[in-house]
Image (cartoon, rainbow, N blue to C red):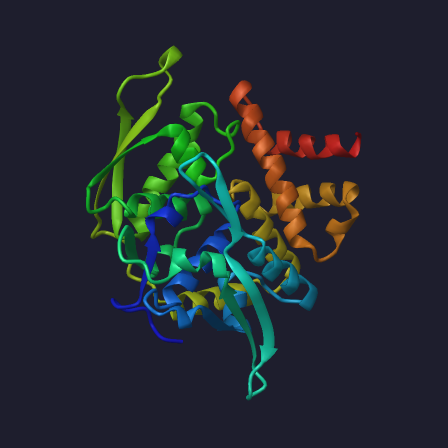
Length: 337
C-alpha cells in the first residue's frame, strides 16, 4: 500500500462537512476519511475503492473475523445516510455508499470493494469550490469520533483562523444528543477539553476556545469562539501503512478474542472504564440479551452506547459518585423490567 504523501489528500466539500454526524463510530468515520483519501475528487471513475481483507480488518479494528460479522460491519457502512437540506426547509436523504463487494482476485487474495452511491457523487467528485483539504495522517491517531469530527469542523476554518459557532450547532455536528452533556461544564470536561488535547498532540492544527457574545437565561453559554492555528508540535506523521502495521501488532498482542471484544466494547463508553469493568458489564448484558453471548458485537456496542448516553444524561441532573456502578445498575434495571 502506498505511503501517504503531500499529494495524497482528503478533499471534502463544506456542505458534507457541515452535516450532522450520522451516528458513525470512530472506525466508520476513519474508514470514510481513508476512502476519500484514495479517490481522485477530479475523476469520478475512481469511485470504487479496493482494500485487502487484512487492511480493512485493521482499519475497522475488527480483530479476528467471521463471515457473518464481516457482513454486519459492511452492511452498517452501506446504511449510512446523509440528509441535505434545501432552501424551503425540506431535505433529501440518501446513502453514502451503494454497494460493497467481497471477493477473491486472480491471485485468490480476498478483498473488499466499496462504491459511492450515485446521489452522493456530487458531494465527493468534480466540485470546484467550497471545500477544504487535509492529509490523512491527521485522522489516524485520533481515538474518538468526537475528536475526528472536531478536527474536520475546525480544519475547514483554518485559513480564516477562527470560528464562532452556536453551542447547539456544534453539538449537532459532533452527533451529541440534546440531552447528553446538557450542562456546559460536562460538555467542556467530556468533549471540548479532550478534543483540544488530542488535536494538539496528533494533528496539524490546535485551538483555544472561549464563550462568545451574550449569554442566555441563567447565564447559559450560547456561542463559542474557536481560535485555530497551525500546530508544529504534533506526534510524527503516521502513514496508512504504519497505522495498519501498528493495528496488526496490537491485535497480535491481544491473543484472546475475548480481550479484543472488550477493547471494542470499551469504545461505546468512550474508553472511560477498564476492560475488567467492561467484562463485568458484558456479563450483565448477557443475562438480559441472549444474542450478546454470540458474535454480534455491533449490537452489543449499540446497546452499551445507549446506556452510556443515559448515564451521561442522568449525570446532568444528579451528582453520580460511582459512574461504573451506576451504569451497571442501568443495565440490571432492564433485567428486572
